[in-house]
Image (cartoon, rainbow, N blue to C red; front, side):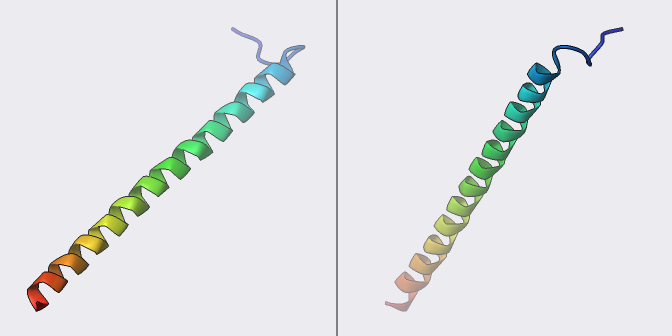
Length: 54
């Protein structure tokens, strides 16, 4: 069985912090992509409505 506590606690804590930060960045990128797709959809619907009016 591996010992995860000991003299290497700071390395483990640093690895956890880096993993947590990369998870936040990944979530932010996904939210930005979703917002872009939603905005594109809104523009497409508005353009379609404008072409049917004129």
